[in-house]
Length: 85
Image (tube, rainbow, N blue to C red; front, top):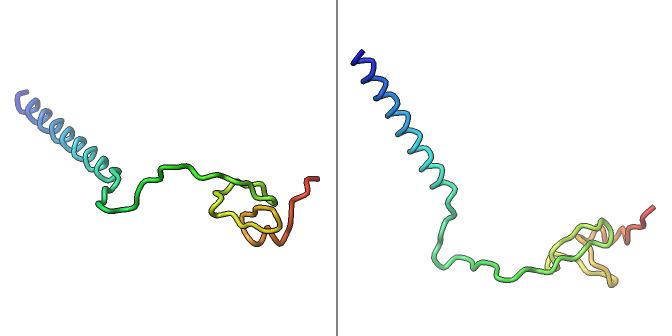
């Protein structure tokens, strides 16, 4: 009975150590990298605008402007304003 109890404690100990080490490794993988001198964090939100054709919101800096309308790309600018049916 003593040998069984000893081996049960050893196996449970090994499983516990394995679980703690895998949890620690997973947390290290998910931790964001901290670089010195890297890009600065965005401090201000950018205005979102709607494409005149597909009605999808995109950042103003990515929008394509033509004929007083904003588009998500030149293809939708060629197709024109979407007319609902």
